[in-house]
Length: 265
Ligand SMILES: [Zn+2]
Ligand SMILES: [Zn+2]
View 1 (tube, rainbow, N blue to C red):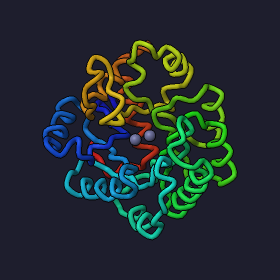
View 2 (cartoon, helix red, strand yellow):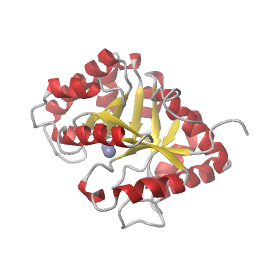
View 3 (cartoon, rainbow, N blue to C red):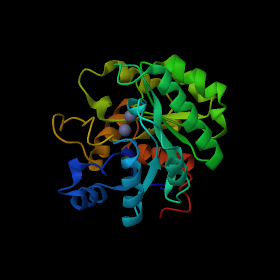
View 4 (cartoon, rainbow, N blue to C red):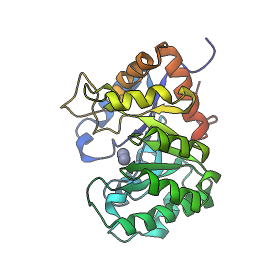
């Protein structure tokens, strides 16, 4: 078959201390499991996670980085000069994760909205897509993306948990979605129903490691190698082969993050 025969973990956080003991092994295990590339998303520890992501992307050819300040940290002042500098790094393939999280009051909602707007402006100025984290906040996120013309750069709603109505809105705005190990959870029928209705051409896979560990490893630390289990579940839901899931989700990632010249086929 002509196409991609490997997966990309499009959203992972292996820069954090959970991986300090065995990061190199974790990366090797991912490659052995046919997860040839990873996108280490910035967004932990204010901007420190983004800095560590860039560092990792320089150390490993198969790791790309993103830069952003998570909505949970919206109460902390944004060091915009540092974010701009990180955003311009050649290995930084997206801006985020940014977005809105109204699940709990992690941080002031208005400040989250302002922070999201700033990230959209930066994404447009460096012409890189956005990684959106949206929890119980789909309508507000859509409103801001529209207002700020985010469709110019597009992006992904990661660990998608919003409704199909929200999907239909973001699709028009040039955004796709990605799914984590959540789709393997026994109690996740509702998410699986949503997956069924979204075309594979608009879906990517991710781990969000160290979180969202898929079955059968739930309860342990998540790592990029487990992307395979999410991809297998996706194949099951879509009633297609794992090969097809690999080819299409990887094509989607290559297209969104403009990886064509950065990876080996
Ligand atoms: Zn997130
Ligand atoms: Zn994340």
